[in-house]
Image (cartoon, rainbow, N blue to C red; front, side, top):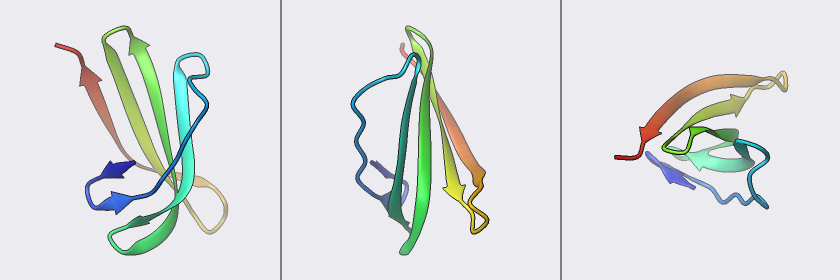
Length: 71
């Protein structure tokens, strides 16, 4: 995955229903962190993803999200 100054490598076997989840250690702006990106298909022409960071207490904190629509 590559997005806005971060890099990491994640793989999944495929979609589980309408979701695809990547959770890996990655580097964001030079800092190593545990990151989760959840892709969700909302219909045939739309999807979104939500980014989360793992906090020291082992809970996931919302970071940001993006929405996409096929033209």
